[in-house]
Image (cartoon, rainbow over all chains, first blue to last red; front, side):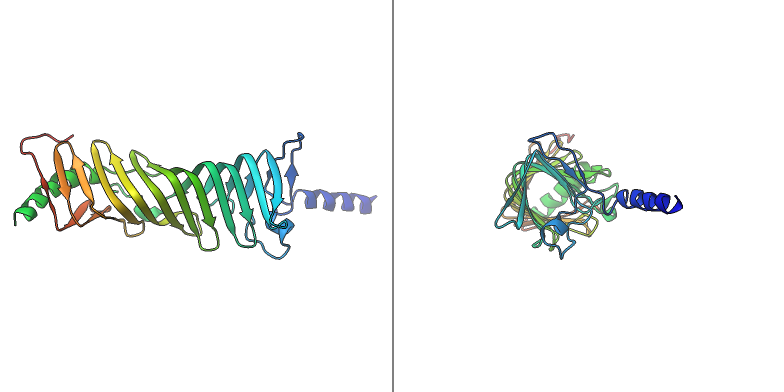
Length: 121
Length: 151
């Protein structure tokens, strides 16, 4: 019994590890993914988009599977809590090249550094 | 000498009423037709109907490149093509604009103009020191209407 509880506990902890957690909400045909480590899924050897958050209505792959494409109210937040957030009609991601391309109704958000948070700016 | 005097008066008026009004903390919101991000080089390139808003300041241009740091904060900005910066009643135009965010320096080049009301200032290069509100105008000329109140 103790062994079974231990296994259950470890399984629970593993499932709730934010580094490993992948949540997909499937309401076909829509696709929504949050906190996905896309880089691992596509290249297996790079972590360049680790911590990024992606969402969109549909997901597809292009260029021999090296480019991830999100369409329909697509949005991305690069590396978690950085100042960069963006949304567009379509987002294409090349994880190995660390390049992201957004097309149509692009809206992005950047922070300014603390140094210029000045009353006279 | 005349140009220098004119520029000096304009600097007093423009820098005090426009540049030094003060922006508060906040993020820059940018919209465009297309955005290409090279996350490895920490560079983002906006193109097509680029419109940026930072508090009460807006910037429109054809193409705008942004270099950002590890925290995603803007380090430098380079706007190209039909650059128009508007803040309140003040309006600046140029072919290119470069912002060094850490130094707080905005440089307008390519027939840059500054206008507020009937006041006009032209130059070969206009540099705005954002932290001090100081303007530097290379080869300045323009018109300045005496007696007009600036908003």
